[in-house]
Length: 340
Image 1 (cartoon, rainbow, N blue to C red):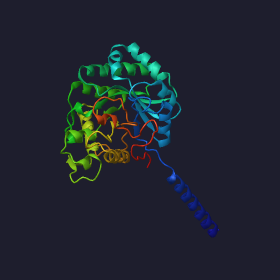
Image 2: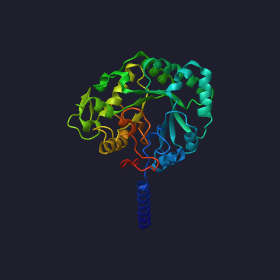
Image 3: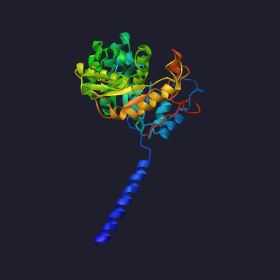
Image 4: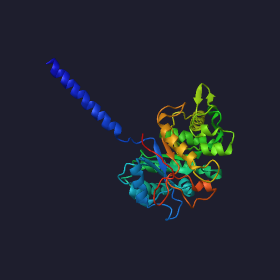
């Protein structure tokens, strides 16, 4: 009996080892990484909507952001399980803020009409500035009311902000919002259990402040880590995100999580924008965000900007070269791996 038990135990151990080996060989999706799907390009520069969604699935990308409702994309996303951030479009913000009925119609046409799509967040504005900021909270309020009435409280409403909403961001412990409307946003997010969407670009910080060490911006070993209130920062991304967390704390919304709704690095357009730097930043970002930041450990939901180069975008050449892939042939601009 003793020999029989030994053989059985050995067989069981071998079976477990084989199963573990097989599981280890299966690519695992990086659940905290999505990719923004910009569409400011002509038909010769971008794949079809269905091909785009298929590329997300092939690459194991589990989340997407789009900057306005797009029926073809929403149809293609049905039953894929790909989570979605959907912007309302800045041009619609004022109307949604002033008309609850329009907000209800928007929810009907763009959320309820697509029950097979995993719509996770609605962004009421992207990097809204100036007088239009007064429309953010009313638009969010009307959209929340429409979703509640439609029994869809699972869809969270937020707004996407850039780092300039902070009056101070360095060191991270000095983070504080510049304008009063952001305190209202923070309180509404707290009340509705929604995250703040933040666009975080170490590339822009490095471009605008040349004295920042490039390796610090690229998640590479840096000779000058930042020590702040007992926390050590080895990369610029973490420092920027934690400055935003500090600002949320100052606004009385410490429990509100942050979702990084955009982050990326261009591959052409200026001296910093090279394929080498873009590949280093984006791959290191993918590999890093599962760990969280010094202030907030744990996976940090993050969306890389962007899936494709967009040849009709305005602005400097860098704006047209943030893509991970070329269209319409879907070849990578540089090697990138979404699995670990």
